[in-house]
Length: 128
Image (cartoon, rainbow, N blue to C red; front, top):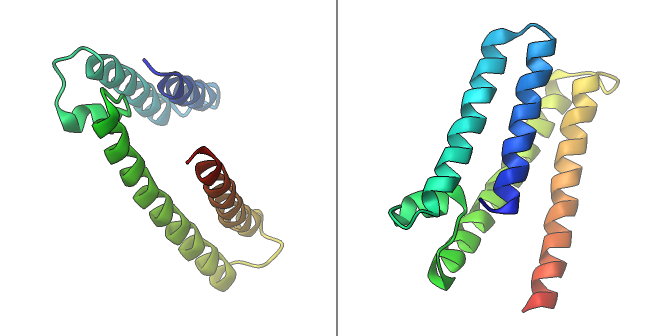
């Protein structure tokens, strides 16, 4: 399993534990199942029997072709994430007071995604 899948699995399991500590068992179980399924998918993707889609969905690339497709797909996801965050921020501006904690969450999410996009572009240009 790649290091990013290990991090995603750990973060998802930690989320499950946090919900369990809060006695929100259904959500905890859902996150635990997601973590297990994600880890199993990543492990299976490396088995050599997985389809192109399975490898790409698990971000477990077999070769340069997989990596190029994955990079392109993740760039599309990045643009979608920015648009979704911007939409959530606009909705927060229209529906919430500026001192509402969720307004700050929406603002921070849009800002941090924009910063991440800029940093990712700098890194990508330097590596090319």
